[in-house]
Image (cartoon, rainbow, N blue to C red; front, top):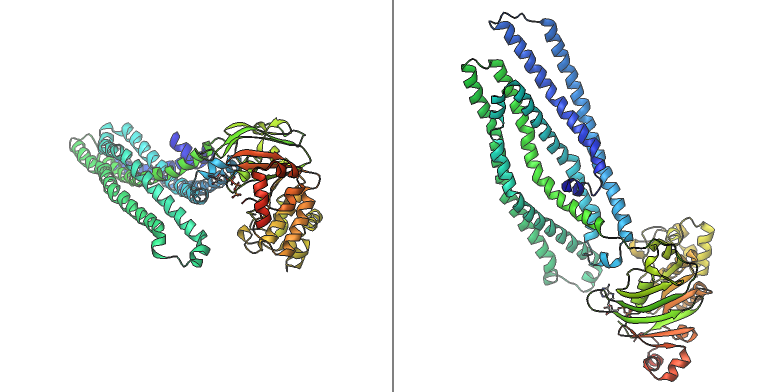
Length: 576
Ligand SMILES: Nc1ncnc2c1ncn2[C@@H]1O[C@H](COP(=O)(O)OP(=O)(O)OP(=O)(O)O)[C@@H](O)[C@H]1O
């Protein structure tokens, strides 16, 4: 059951029809042999000295039955083939959709614990392994088992002694397979890990190509990648080398049953207890049974190996989604109450408390690493605090459905990500279903309409993955347009530190002043103007609120803010 759960990534229903069709195909596969054996027996009885006459009509009927059974065999096998592939690919498509949806609901912390390439591998590679396993290996295994079971049951009715001879090699074969299954899982897990690691390292290598070229990196810089490939090679050889011979022995033992049929059958035939055609029929059907079992034995370890990938997907799906199902409240104020938080063991925010009134502008300042971005991430519920509370509109954020909370928030972070889609659609991600006019209006407000209109494809121009075809300033303004079209009442903003050219800088400032007008704004401030105009300034130092208040008040207090202020006047930048 656990194996099925893993192989179907939690959706076993998808395999019922393909398995039923495979069973049907195997039943149909036995039919021509059973009818042929019956015909041979009738002919033998007629010519042997038994006094029976040859029933031509019955023979014709048997021949017709064989023809029909061949047609049925073709029809059922093609049905099983279609359903197996349809089921396996449908299962993978549905599984990928479910996993993508689930990832969206997970806390960012859960995702961050994973290796960068692992989720991509899981989404494409692991599901591809399940496709192969469910479309090719599973029918082979199920078919093999059904065929052998039916043959053994049939033989038991005809002659239990022959049936026992037929399966004489099964118990030692099963014993061997059972004995190695623990070891096989161990080496299989190790191989799957090596494969996934090699894939992640390769992905990292390709993604970092810009830096690799820029710094002319080679040789020793890629020992990690080389080691990952070397380990994969060793694990592959070890897996095949260790277990291949074991399976060959198990198959030889199973097939040794044909020799036992011959010995036991000959003995019975000499004693007059078994007719020669019955012996021939047993050998004919017996040989037909061993092939699918051999196929199943070969497919089984591979299938179990793929189940490791299914297990990784099932484990990911079992990761708890972010809790909270209440709608967001109507208020737009934000409050931190004694918030403690850390990404790992080390605390990053330590007892942070502050309140932001609705419709005001609050600037968060502090030295690099003091926890400013973390504060914004907790408001957006990328993470939940370890203790204390983040409250929005007077209610704990962690009780709210993440989707409901997101409708209240617009975010513009420094590392703007644009999807590999048109510029228009990238703005429309802010509000699905927005009309072209609304998109253009948002772009005008965000001071990017002009440069978009100058592009050859206008709003239909494709943006490279990650926004690689646009300048830093253009990307930021598109992000502002995306936030603008959302019309959310709370805006979280991380001002750009990267210096833009004066024209871009002025446009960006204008775009942002339009975005924040009349909203609750919490901004990581890097610019003098923003700090001075803020209704309230929160000064963070090593994860604690060192001071808070208005600009004049904090300058007079002569604390950290006053020091930062003096430094800022020399460097023109906050967050020193
Ligand atoms: N995803 C993460 N995993 C682990 N540690 C993190 C993560 N993000 C931030 N940190 C750590 O948390 C601390 C606070 O980081 P944060 O980004 O909130 O600081 P910041 O004040 O915004 O810094 P900066 O002004 O340099 O952007 C830092 O020590 C940082 O190394």
